[in-house]
Image (cartoon, rainbow, N blue to C red; front, side):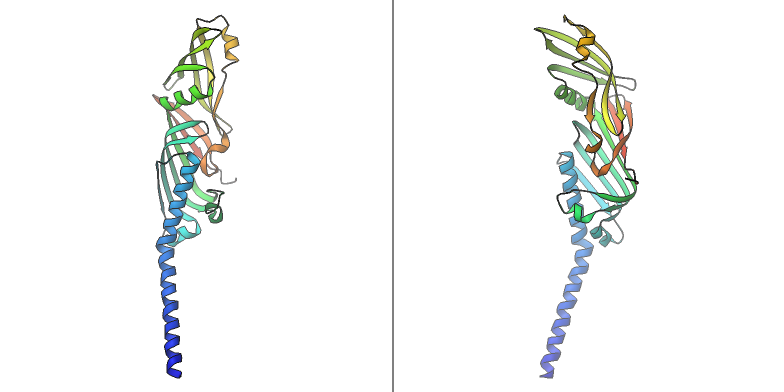
Length: 239
């Protein structure tokens, strides 16, 4: 009888030992992999793209299971932010603490704290052409040229039976964390109505609202370069 009890005890300890090993292995491999995979999926959903590469790292790796990410890097291509698609979106984070219940629910990625979290995006001429064609009613044959000083947009629009040639100049700018095309000049040819009247049809165009960026970030800086606009966003840790 005593021998059977000893054998049963050994079996119980063996099972507990195996469960403990499984738990350790899961914490070191399965749970971090699951966290990284879920972050990638949520970012892809938020940005409406399948082209996402995410790398997360912590030492020990089990910290990832509780949402503690020491290093976060992600690259998204053709990512949608508001109304505009960005050619490339790069995310970098350091000592990021995620809300894990939110991550594994429908709430998505929520950042509780981060020592550093920045987002850099590139809007090229094709990206801007596409969004302007969608946002401005009844224009076609849109062409866009971006340089450091201005954004030049040419297009055609059918106005009162005539095909008007339209030329707009402007800047891509940030206002309260949102992204805008700010029109500074508008000219047209081959139309009977004045430029001022046409301006009522166009005006400034919001490209991305302040709440459309992932991880609660807001646009802080916009820089025009030859052929593209570079957007930098960050998160206010006081939020």
